[in-house]
Length: 85
Image (cartoon, rainbow, N blue to C red; front, side, top):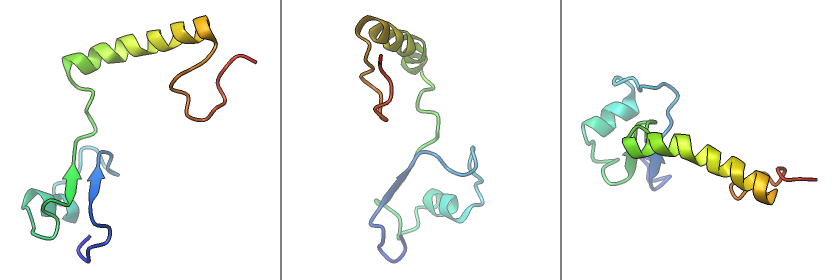
């Protein structure tokens, strides 16, 4: 990124959670080093940690199971394998 390639990055999952504040990328982000300002987005891998997120964690799997049992298909299947045969 310092050389302009890639033009930007958005990272939600890092090798270590929580990230080490001494890691060069985390330090650059925290100190708003000019080479990354407006080009780097870091978010904690905890987007679900809210009242609405916790409700979704309980509701969505049930909705998915009910839809599969009713229709035999999964709307969120990404590998094309799930379904009645």
